[in-house]
Every structure is written in C-alpha cells, then in structure tokens.
Image (cartoon, rainbow, N blue to C red; front, top):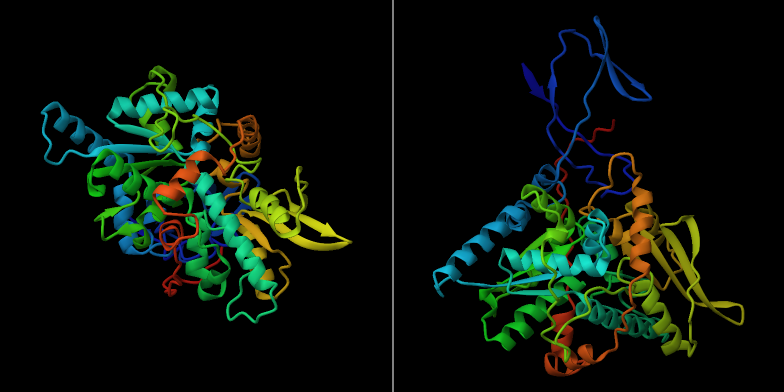
Length: 482
C-alpha cells in the first residue's frame, strides 16, 4: 500500500524561486516493512535505499509544470484557475470553434484571432527545425494562419516602446535621486520589470522593501496587449472583447503575467492578452500532428500600425538576448545625462557570466554603473546587497532564467546529451546575427502621437506603466530540508 510523504521542500536551488521552498508536491512512496527508518545512501549515479535484499535505486521525482502551477506555495488558487485558460488545449479549442463559426458564416460568437510572436521562441524553434530565424518566423506565421489566425504580429514595436519608456523612467529617477532632495522611497538602483518570474518573486518574497526599486514600465507582452486591444481593435472596427489575443513567449511565467488583474480592462471588458503559448508547447502541437514547422507555407508578418505593408520578421535589440534593457538604457543615459557617446559596451563578469557590470567613468570617478543579473542565485545576491545598502548600481537588468530570456523555462529543450549551455550559445549566436532595431522610429512616433496623444501624457503613463503589489506570505509548508 502506498502513502504520501508530508512535503517535498526545494532548497538551495540556484535558479528557481526561493522559497518555492513551499512546494508541497505529494510524493507516493512505498511504506518500508522495517520498523526503523530505511537508510538512504547517496552515490554518484543517484540515491539508494538499503534493505535486507540489498541496495535498491530510488526513482527520481519529477515535478511537472501542471504540478508546479497547481501548488499554492507560489501562486494563488485564483491564479491557478486563470492558468487553465493558458493551455495549448484551450487555444486549439478556441481556434476550432472559430473556424467552425466561419464555415457556417455565423457572426454570433465569432472572434478575431490575433497572434503575437516574440523573438526568443522563434529562435528556439528555428534551431529545433534547422531553419534561419527569418524563415522560422514566416513558417510560424503560416502555421498559425492554417489554424485560423486572422492576424500574426511580432513584438518589435512593443519592444521598442518598452525600451523608450524604461530609459525615460530611469533618467527621471536618476535626476531625482541626484537633485539633493530627500526622497521618501528609494529610486535607485532601478531594476527592470519585464521578467514576470522576477516580479512574482519580488512581490511574494520581499514585498514592500523591493517594489519601489522596480521599474513601472510594462513588459513588451503587455504593451502589445494594449496595442492589439485598443489600437488594432479601433482600426479594424472590432470590440476589444471580440478579439482573442495570443502571445508566443519563451517562459511559462508569461501566463501568470497575462492573468494579472492589473492587465484586465473593465472599460473594454477584456484582458490585454487572452492566452500565452510557448515554444515547447508549439513543438508539442506540431509533434502531435506529426508535422515539422517548415511544412507550413511561409506567410508575412502583419504590421497594422506601420506605413509599411509588411513587418520585419525578426530583429534584435543590442546584444542582450533579453530585450536589451541594460544596453539601451546605458547608452541613452550616458548621452542624455553626461553627453557621452558610447559606441561599444564592455561588460565585466563578476562571480559568473550571468552577473556582469558596466561603468561610465569621468575623471576617474564612476558616474554610471549598470549590471545584468540573470538567474535566482544572482538575484538573491543582488537583493541581499540592497538590504545591506551595498548595491552601488544605478540600473540592473534582472531576469529569472540563467542566460536570460533565450534560455526561458519554456524554450525547446536540447537533445539528449547536449548540455544546456551549449544550446544557449548556439541560440545567442543566432540572435546576434539579426538586424538591430532602433527604438526611435516612425512607428513608435506615430503610436505615441495617435494612441497616447504624446510621449509624456497621462494616457501614455496609464497604458505603458503598471503597479506592483506586495503579497502576504502564507507559511503553509513544513520546513523540511533534504
């Protein structure tokens, strides 16, 4: 007869939320016939239980995405319900129902399906199916159109807007912090806000201490949601609630982000993003149909806000594979604050390649100091420095995943025997070969003018920025360390 252990506590995990340390996944185990506890031996190839019959190797415990998202240690039950709307099964169900309505020429219940793809999952799928990134983007567009998508967009314009807003926010904070006026809340270092795994960790683990440091600029996914549900909806004459907006992202945490109440519009009776699908889920969908990506006819990316009829299929922002926040903001701040043109960025690795810094010096003094902190080991070190008043940075690009978004938790996994760092290097090389986007372009200027009525208006502030909320911690897990 099997029974369940009380709790499995995940401790000392470098690159996962601590404490997710409140993970309470029940594990079925066979009850030992011995009256005393069985002795566990740890060998190089695993764990062994010593019994009268000899040593027996214990099976590895696997915690799936479903197990993780169903746990109340990291997300609430309400969030758990919302996550069920973010599955590939739900997406395919919506697409099938919409196709059926179209075939019947029925307008009641018909929705406009809009898919937005971000660059990191495209690169992951390009590597998986041995395609160039530009080819993969167009075949992916063709795939979604074959499923019934009406529009396929990319996040380029939203990435551009996020960088513009983030750099403006930083310069404003820097000037306030160096003006000599006493501030009631800390403003520097400013910590980037586009990674929902990091934001979730900050809200639920460090709460009101850390939140004032985090940039209020929305992530590109959520900026894209505003553009689709307001700009595009108005342009095509469809109510926001009749648009079903799908985003293709590199991590599962983007599902949580899309489910936040902050990104639900009461006025439009609609979420900015209705469904998030990931690279690994697309791979699974293709595998289920036994069709590789290149089978689907290539299709151009739509660009409803551009003067051009077609959008650039793939692009990069500087050389950071996580959106280029530290790179772009550093260059802009150097010019805006110190009239310095920085052409080449030279980072210095600290403890590891995922924690690196860059400085701008004047007369031997550091006047700008930026850092990139990827992975929870480095994030925890950063937070501890902040708590001790030892963080000397002005801005930190923070990403929950080691190597950043290119190694998102929902990217296609490497083949058996291929180390993850080797795959990441290959993906980074593909990214670096992409053409570079310049955020100040005609598209962003027109969006500021037509949708937000200017770059520094209350409407721009409202729709391009957000708020964070400290979450009261519930100590529901047993404090067990293995």
